[in-house]
Length: 243
Image 1 (cartoon, rainbow, N blue to C red):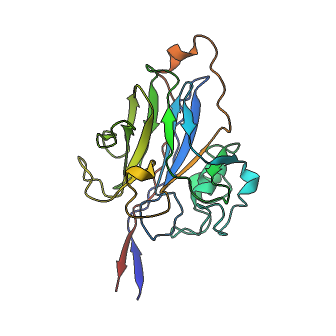
Image 2 (cartoon, rainbow, N blue to C red; image 1 turned 90 degrees about the vertical axis):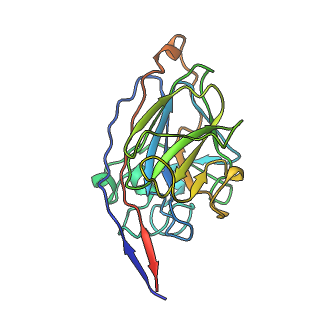
C-alpha cells in the first residue's frame, strides 16, 4: 500500500493586535484521523480579558517538550510538510514555521500526566458580557465555537481565513472541520469537548498553548474586551490517497 500526499501549502503568518490585559491562548488543529498528528493544519488564537481554559490536564513549559519527532508530547511528531513543522515549532520558533519566528516563545503547553492529548477542553470568558476574539486562516479547514449547553448549535467563523468577535455568554468549546465548502462542513467535525464528537478517534485533535495561570484583570479592563489578538496561521490541507 502506497500513500501519495497532495494539497496546497500556505505560508504561516501572524497579525498581532493584542490589547493590554488580554488573556491569550494559541491552538493547533489536526485535520486527519491516522495522519501525522503534527497539529499544524490550522493554528489559531483565542483571546479575551479574563478568559480561562478549563481542562483536566496540566501545563508544562517548553523545556518539557524537547522539540523534534519523539512523539512526546502528543503533537511532537514528524510532519508531512517537512522537517521542523509540527505545531511546537510554530509556537516556540526555531523551525520552518513562520520563518522560524515564535508565536509565543514563553507559552506553556497543555497535556496529560503522560504528555498525551487532553479531552474535553472548554473556555470560560471573564464575564457573561465578555467578548472573545477567535482568528484563523487555512485552506479548506474551518473553526467554530459552541456553548457547552448546546453543542449542536455551532457558530462557524465567517469564511476560511476569517475571524470572529463574539460574546458567548457562558462556557464554550471549539470545533474544527476538515472540509469546509464555504458555507458548511462537508467533512469530519472534531470537538475540543471530545465527548460531543471526535471523528471516531481516541486522540483529541486540538493542542493548546498559553499561560499556566490566568492573571486577574485590573479594575476597568473588562471594558477593553472588544479588542483582541488575531493570530492567523495558514498551513495546508492534506489529502492522502491509498492504492
